[in-house]
Image (cartoon, rainbow, N blue to C red; front, side, top):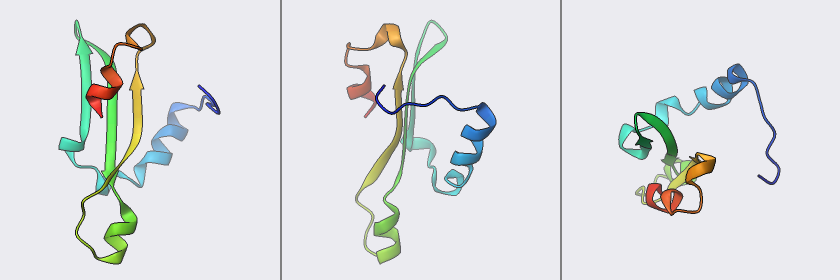
Length: 80
């Protein structure tokens, strides 16, 4: 993917740790096929809305991924 740079698992965990208090389980969707994870969508609330104190009506898709062999079949659209 454009601008993609692989990182170590520990760095990935550190970068997302700050989001943990904001993550709602119903905003984390996974897709499985034959007991294998093939897609993931992680959304968080729009922090700017929360800071302004207005009603939350927007979420930000932070991460969306689909296994290479399942790309182009609409799975990413389904997850979002």
